[in-house]
Length: 206
Image (cartoon, rainbow, N blue to C red):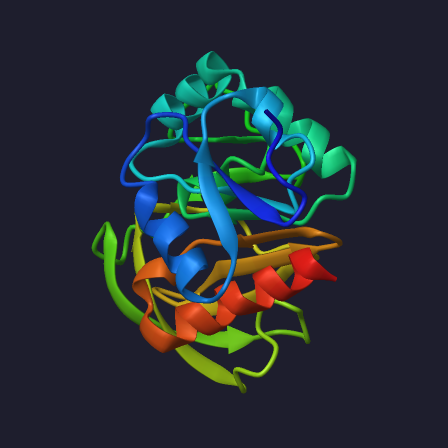
């Protein structure tokens, strides 16, 4: 049975605590559910790709699950799409953490290790610096504190809407069309993270 039009599909490909993203979306008023069947992505109001751990295992698990192709079809169709942490990194061409493994290639560039001058992983709250207006950051003001756990990040590009300072500016959030991404965990970022998820839910309902 297809996901109802008003539901947001959280892609369950066996990596990490995916239910925390589902619960956070529900908390801000969304109808959201974990999906393991690619057919259940069809008709979703939006799609969320969480991810924790390393790029290579996440890319492999997404491909094995069959949800990789479903994610690409949703993005190509203009369905609102949110990548979180490694799920955000998977939107790019690839990562130097896992040479030879391909990302979705929706955003251009290679994910790279954080600067050698800083401790990795970055496991802390950090402030976002907004670079330009975006749907993701709407209503949050110029600076918001969010929670990061990562050792790699994409480069800053035209899609980047916010950075954080960690040994220099680090890409923290991106938005291009209906594709949004956060290097941090909005589901672990208190009221600020919930406000961002509420912005995504509103985009899905638009």
